[in-house]
Length: 67
Length: 242
Picture 1: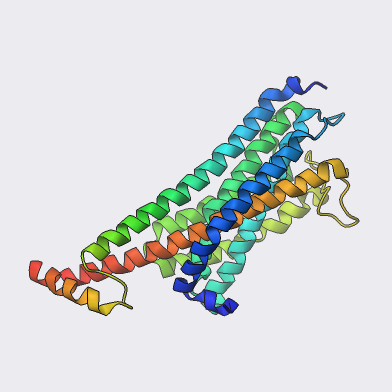
Picture 2: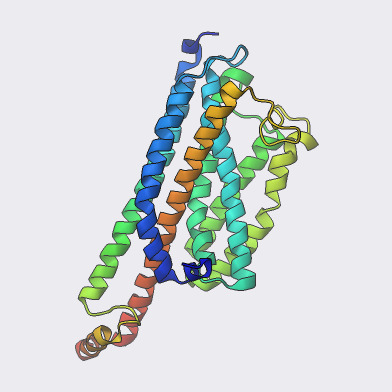
């Protein structure tokens, strides 16, 4: 049985596997950057984690004044 | 660092940030070595060169099942122990497991057409793997439709534990029913029946894909922890405004 007989199926299988792997890597990388951007945006507005109350308190006051 | 320290999301993030570059390097090296081995594999007298598809199909099948097994342990962590990272793990693993199951189905079809004369047949092995893929989609849908993460985690955990019944069905389907799919040839009592010429590249490729799975899971868990921080801060922002 010649390799060329089924070359199309082999290439298609490796292309499909590569597409799945690349899609997973892209999904993880894009999601990471989106979450980092969202966190940076919130921190720029003064909202940070509860473990850092000093930074979040003024932002809450500003938000109340702005409302 | 004790293993229980990883229950703390901040410590887990630090570990993930340190480990991911090493995982990335290991994945690249493992695939370079594995694909080099696969390229040197000779044709088989019955399958010809299509045997090369097995080095994708089999790891895809194993990792599709491993993904659900990881989710099942995480589901128990959510329902029984309420471990802080349990539902993070379950949510992060679902799309990755689904992708590997899809890879298994697609590459299997592409092997089946020249070897069996058909892309698909409703035999027990193929159908039970398709059910696994649909279960993955169901869990992903639960995570996306239930807004409260803790309620979504419980619903997804119950579905995951019920869905785990499919794992032994997949594994033993080729023994319990008369299937077109061949019986187990690697993970079986009495040892593998695959010739070492093909077994070694298969195990190397399976290791490479498993490393990739672990790296993706670690990265997706890191993303999920960050997403929950964003959600918490947005709630804080909203409560400050109202």
